[in-house]
Image 1 (tube, rainbow, N blue to C red):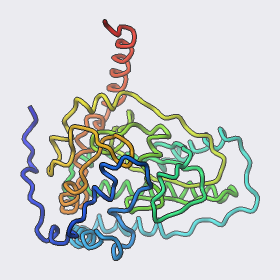
Image 2 (image 1 turned 90 degrees about the vertical axis):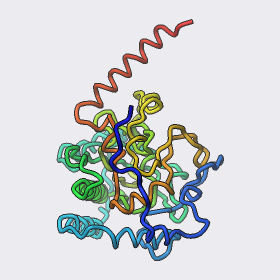
Image 3 (image 1 turned 180 degrees about the vertical axis):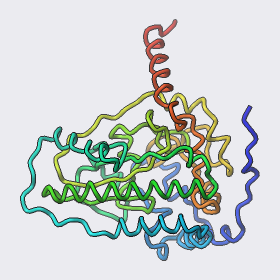
Image 4 (image 1 turned 90 degrees about the horizontal axis):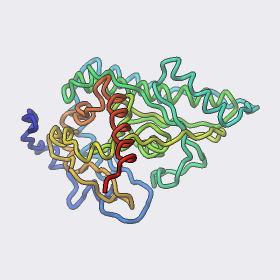
Amino acid sequence: MAKPNPHRPFTPDPGFMALWPEGYSGNAVNGLGETGVRRPRMVWWAPDPDGPVFGEMQKWFYAHEPKDPDLMALRTERRAIIEAPLPDLAATPVQRTPEEWTGALARFVEAGDCEMTGVARLRPEWVFEHHETDFGTVIMLGVQHDHAELSYVPELRGGIEVTRQYCRAAAAAKRVAGWLRQQGWEAEPVTGPMTGKILMIPPALECGFGELGKHGSLINPEFGSAFRLGAVLTDAPFAVTAKRSFGVDAFCQNCRVCEDACPPFAITPDKQTVRGETRWYVDFDACIPYFAETSGCAICIAVCPWSRPGVGLNLADKLARRAERIADDPGP
């Protein structure tokens, strides 16, 4: 039996809901129910909220965000990181093998800039409709949450931890892009949470960061869902890193932890078709009012069993052993 949810029942703020554009659905923008593959469209986190349909609701989100000094300091820090200029492009590109380029990313983990790196070939369906890029490779970067701090969500203390890691992810992306430019290769950082040129979860899945969980976020055996992403687009000749599968999909089929913890019932028990792919999907229209009122929520990634320190690797190992037993003894 699920534990009582202290955040239910949830009634959306009337002021926020009054700004909802008539007849508009974020799920439709995201492509829910569409059977054809297409590029994504911006629905939230617009860099300039004056233009998009949901812009007024995004402004409400900013206006109702707690003006906590630590949170505001992190917002200022992140803005400074993003606005800082990149180094000039070196005239002569450094030459390495693709494997050497990818291996060189380890320096950023060793330096503590991030905890994960991976490389994927950029696909057109990952690029937002309002953007174009000539880059063919995307470097993914992951920064781990302090789970003890994250566990305070949806309270402000947990939100500060989320913002702190977005700062780290932005800084890591800028450092990697700067390093590549100093090596003579074009590079462009992509940072969250604002909508950039590309989706970040699909290339993170492709490069081996983990699998998609029922809560719509990545699940990684080392860090669970308690991490954030940054990316770098480049033309440097990196070798791709392998995609990984370790039993998350089957686990999520039978787990209800994030479903039961979600205040607005935005997480559903079944996969849905989104832009031609059947996958886990979180109901945007149900999620966003609570997200806006709590400055980001993040309950689902905090409660995910995989996110608890020391659990993920043991759980992945257990699922791998189970899969081996099934393969060895498929039954009648």
